[in-house]
Image (tube, rainbow, N blue to C red):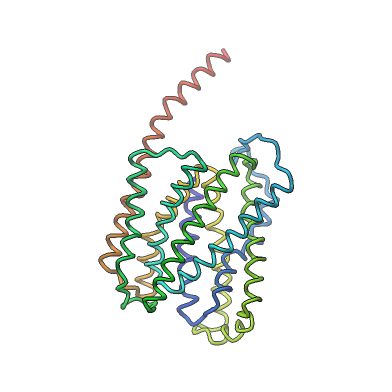
Length: 336
């Protein structure tokens, strides 16, 4: 679980900053910026041939294997959905300062909680409710502040609103994707290392095909060569930005889906919000984004909300240990 969390946090932070760097240095193609979010999946194919040890991800779901039609439908749904909210995410990142964009993404936790309640029978305790409330408020605060004059990404008020709405919609889409994936693991998918890789690879393959259609239909592909030549950091840096953005998004995907598998989609989303303080601080250093008072309050609320959620998991762990001990004692007695 720790490894998956580190992969999620590092991949998310690096991919967000690289995405902002892409637009800041002169690139303009929204479709290309969206494509690299899913294009890195081939690097995961060798893992399909890795046989995990007995101590790795276990196969705890012994349900009947789903039919090919169900699997194709499921992966197609996830892929199309991934392409849609990835484009919305890209538009938000283009029109908003990276610090503001990252904090608004905290709203995905509130959406995820709602979807988990209906799809995954998630139980809500006072500490979880407090966590969701604080994390949602931390992003909502940013609606009332468009004081970004000192930020690297200067946009009109109209584009700011478009960026905000697209980021909210992308957060809702991502949350629904997580909850649907958790439901699939519980109902139709066998919980194995290979299946986790399949979910990432096949949904990314479908998403890439959808985005490629958009790239060529929109005509943006004609401007890519000129965009690379005009990139402020040079041709090599342009290519390396796209390559490493693709890689870091796949690192993030492994961490996110791994946490869904090991714990829950809501926990995966909470770990994602842990990256909120990381990205804005790095954005201030790298992109000279302005750290306003509203952003500072939003970060503190996000940290408080995360701590509240982790404390609930700590209480759950304390409660489960006596039960596990009783079960083990009974097993020992029965064997005797």
